[in-house]
Image 1 (cartoon, chains in turn red, cyan):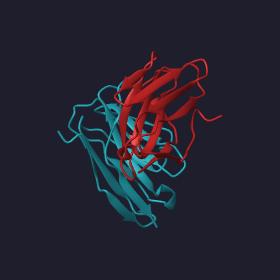
Image 2 (cartoon, helix red, strand yellow; image 1 turned 120 degrees about the vertical axis):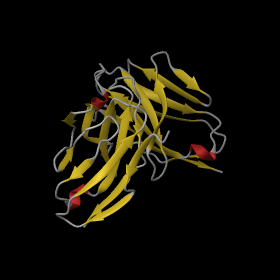
Image 3 (cartoon, rainbow over the protein chains, first blue to last red; image 1 turned 135 degrees about the horizontal axis):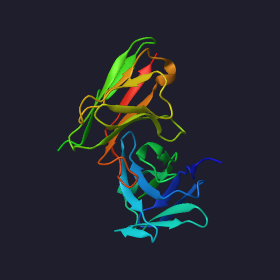
Image 4 (cartoon, each protein chain N blue to C red; image 1 turned 45 degrees about the vertical axis):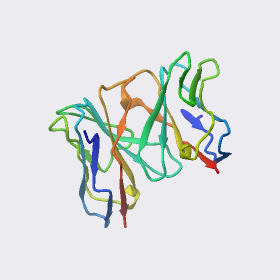
Length: 112
Length: 114
């Protein structure tokens, strides 16, 4: 099993819809989790960290389910500008950033 | 405040040539790293540094060298380019080594080795 797995998509979603995708991780001791977004041919940028209690930033909600070992990202009222690839990033043992494991990304396209 | 600056944006090399990818950050970040990104694979760590004068290998270090003589700069050297090194390279830095310190990425270098 891969350390971090994401559905590659693509997810094609109409503007204004709600979309959610998950990321599963294999190491149950993992402590820190992040979502990055990467626009086509650009660098990854931090979207949000994922906290144990779940957290929200505007239209974006991130949740952690330790029992089932996955994190999720929910986007409400999707905008055309949300079209991007979303990378799940996990620190498997709460080590330094050299241990970060990146998922291969989920591609999201918002359709007008 | 420019963040993380990488140069060049694009580069084409012939097999066997060497070159240096430059990376500089102006945020006084302690941690710097180099990744490569290939289709269908997650970002893979090449080398990293936790401070000036300290470097270490990541997951895929073969064929690459780094040095960190200052806090700001972290160049990546390709010693003898091979087609397998065709990739997109990203430099990334974080304020601390981690684990809760998010990475800031440069805008990438697209390298083609023929």
